[in-house]
Amino acid sequence: MVRRTQQLAAEHGVRLRTLESPWNELLDHLEPLTFDLVLCVGNSLAHAEGTSGRLSALAAMARVLKPGGRLVLTSRTWELVRGGGTRLDVRDRVIRRRDRDGVLIYHWQIEDHWDDEHHLEVAVALIESDGSVRTYSERLSMWPYRYEALVAELCASGFTIESSTFAADTEGYTVVGRRA
Image (cartoon, rainbow, N blue to C red; front, side, top):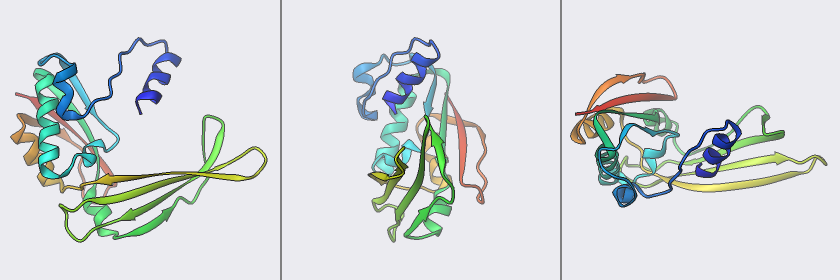
């Protein structure tokens, strides 16, 4: 994601400093009370290890925000993901990105308990110019959470909820929290 962000910034002529850091090390690289806006997108918070990992991540994001600063967080609706159980999802259409065609495949490993480590293997089957198929995959660990738990954790980390698009029957949502 960092590399893609750098590429997009360069393509659009935007000067941008990127940083790759675990949440708990943000203040090793950034000054506290520095930013007006923090983006936590792409469902990244689910990769923090459990409740304590999420609380640590949210606290670190709060510490780099100025008072009144906003956190914009996007998330899957984990209640729906878990409701589908362990499964293989093969997307029903070819997608095109950067002049390449491919098919996305997701293998969800859903555990019995919310607090257990879940896994998602994402595979991309790329269709090469000669018609052959080359597959790339990555296995990710995740710790899903209920929407109500996220709201409580945001509030415990010093945020007030400014807006939310959560709906129990939609795949994902955005929450905007304002730092006190």
